[in-house]
Image 1 (cartoon, rainbow, N blue to C red):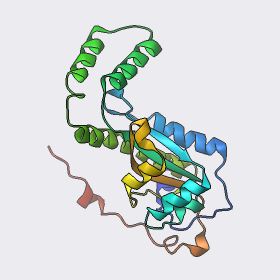
Image 2: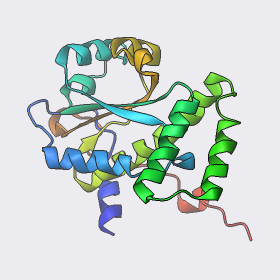
Image 3: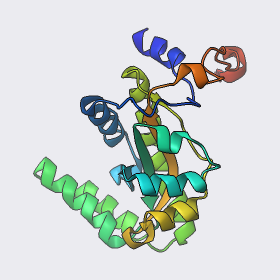
Image 4: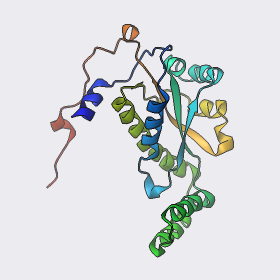
Length: 211
């Protein structure tokens, strides 16, 4: 019930208080929730960039529909997905798994070869879209973790990804921005959404049981 209460409390915050900072321990737990999120084949094909530089955040605001949360938030998280699957990236994650677990598994190694024979040969845009969907899993975990920590956030797709990529030089890192998450604390007196009821479809319109 506690988690559901926190999810009832959260909303897409429209006005954030620039004077309030999210404590480092809360930020760390939100980031860790995203890091622990599941991803397809365990490849974890995305990174989180915490944009602290005020000048960069001001530039991002200009290409994000002038949304003030970009600059007023305590922290701006950019979830950036791999621009493509490469043998090097796939092998790195499989090697890391073997290192952490301390053994090699025949079935696991066969699965490595299956991915190596499939993913790198696909169109790069197909691979990016797949990686971006994995980034959204971590993004969702971060949103839920923020609510649990009673930290406000604004899930944000309203920006020009190509422009953000240029501002943050993501192309040089083989990344493309997928979604952003400003974190901070609501400025209730300036937020028109703060006291409005949460609107979701009734359960009967949202869930179907198939027997």
